[in-house]
Structure formats: C-alpha cells, structure tokens
Length: 296
Image (cartoon, rainbow, N blue to C red; front, side):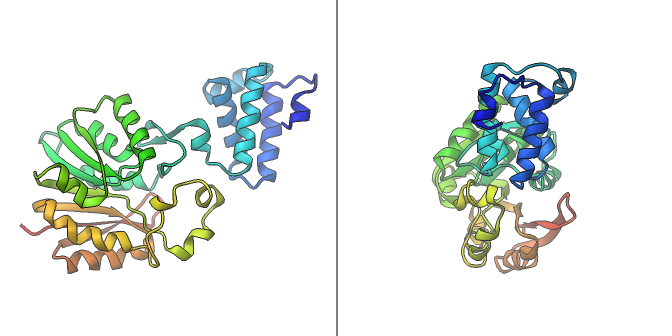
C-alpha cells in the first residue's frame, strides 16, 4: 500500500490489503509473506488473525490504514516483525521486545527444557542467568517452577527495560532479580550465595559470519548479543571457568551455542574441571545445547 495508493478513494478491505501486502512483501524477499501480512494487519486492527477472515470485506479505518502503511514500510526494510508488533511468543507466552534486545528464538526453548529437567517442581532452587535479554528465559523458568529463584544479569539498558516489563507482566518479581552488570563478576557483586545451576544463551557468532546473517538480524538486532570474537567463543571461554566460583558442588551449567561449536564447548567444560558433559539437539534436530556439572 503505497502513499499514493493509500490516498485514493479506493476501498481498502481486509481482503484487498492482505493480498496487496503479501505481494509487496514477497517482492521484498520477506520470508512467509502471507503469514506476516496477516500478523501485521491483525496488529494494525488490534484483533486476532482468525478475525481477519471473518471480516474479509470490512473496510479499514483511516487509522488502521495509517498504521498498516507504517508497518509495511518498516518490514520492507527488514526490521524484525517482532520489533514492529512489539511482541514475540516464547514457550507459549507473549514477551515484550523491541529495538536493542535479541528476539527470542524457538531453538532457545530447548535450553529452557534442559534447565527444567534439573529443577524439581517441589524444591527451592537458585539459578543464575548470564545475559537475560528480553527476560524470556528467566520468566519462563519462574513460571514453570514457582519454587525457583533466578538471578539474572545483563549490560544492556534496552534489555533491562524489556526484561523488567516482562517480569512485571507475568508477576514473577518475587522470583526474578535483574542485575545490571557484566557476567559472573556482576553476580558476585550482587550476592555471595551459590547457585544450583547457571544458564546462558551467550553471543556465539564469529566476526566473519556477521555480515552473512539475514538482514533482519545483521542490520537490526544488537550486535553485542550476537558476536563474540573471531571464533565466536570469546565470551564462553571466560564464562565457563568463572562459573565454578558461583556454582554449588554438583551444580550444573547449560549453554546454547552454534552447532559447530558443541564439541569445542564440551572440551572447554572438561578443561575447567566440569564433568558429565552432554550435547542436546534443538527442535530443528541441530546440536545446540551443551550442559555440564561441577564435581561434588
């Protein structure tokens, strides 16, 4: 829907704008153009996707057309859909997201699954998260395990804003503590009480891979949440040995990494004195999660 097209006297029905947007997004090489057209229009009309089909012949209001025009322009330059709608589903819940925070990925749900396997429902457990981003991991763990306490840190002000909003939305303030600071040192400055487990989805993209990432990611999502040195392991190399200082004996650590890094990361765990290393596949059948345990 171009400015000139939108300013004509033509009637823009739900059906017409869906088809136009689908065709336009397809021309812009947007993946799943029909689905995204539906999601954008549902957001503009403040309705569920199914309602678009029950209101196929309904005419858009001026306000809806203005919103839709803005949304389509932003998506055409590959701004992430989640930034436009301000929401992203993760583990069956909607999370507030926006510029400056990493968009939650479905493969990260496997990271949560592995953590939950280590967290009995009826026992109070302490978990540390390094790099909370939108807060989707910490909030999900808190909702799935009401007896767990999660202390999470991040250096990003944008992440702190969105994470705090999500913590409040899901009313887990009594379970989730958000700490402003970098890595294990920030956690140590905040508390001296050790943890039963540590979870992190750290940056793990190589410097030379960044330019080849999809435009949605490379030009819009925060680089610092994605890239970690020449081999993608700069942060992980520091994180694993430092983690021993805040883990209880027998405590576990679970990391999301690139599939090609799993064996290397398992080796880094062993070098740091961890044992019982395991590699898990994500929902796309790719090696993705590495876990290990501190002896004790």
